[in-house]
Image (cartoon, rainbow, N blue to C red; front, top):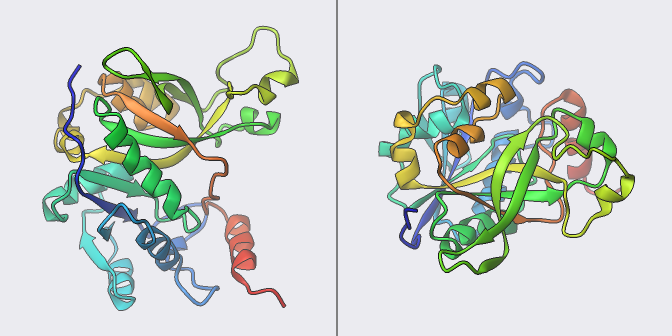
Length: 268
């Protein structure tokens, strides 16, 4: 197994596009007094382990907005099929850093501590090429919800065979209710350590993984599940995951955005 060098620097990259089907122009919605992309940028800037935040976008409007509030924007083509593909396209224009953290533009409430935890994972687990986060899944409704992505995990073992405390290796990700219990009981949702994990869509990539991204084999699993992280698993690149207790809420629908605006309002 390839052992990577210990990361010494990290940069956060926020892929942002204007065309979103369920919530049109969501990156620029500004009912809180700030555009959504600025909320995400401010949250990312609070991370201590990264030295810079960059927005990569195919929209002149988003880029102009980012520059207006003092951010750094890099333009990419509209053809990018995913946030990661957009980052890969911009890689040679990003600041020099060993680790690139992909923060989704619609995650304005992602905590700085969560970002720092993902970066720290790569330092603790040198065999890993990618780090991500998970949170315990305790509700049967979430387990049945295809929009809540499930992560199947096993304890992370170091090269010397010992377990790395608090670290998990991702075996698979799915929109299905996995692992599938032959004999279901609600007690399975209360297991500790958890059996059921929800994936938190944050990735810390070693730059070397992104540099060879376009040479990774195509993944039928990624296509079937519509989950690009399965391409990494199929390519044999180890993904390490750590637990956070509360997942931030991404903004996907008008209802999500209305709830976010309400949370932003100061109490009367």
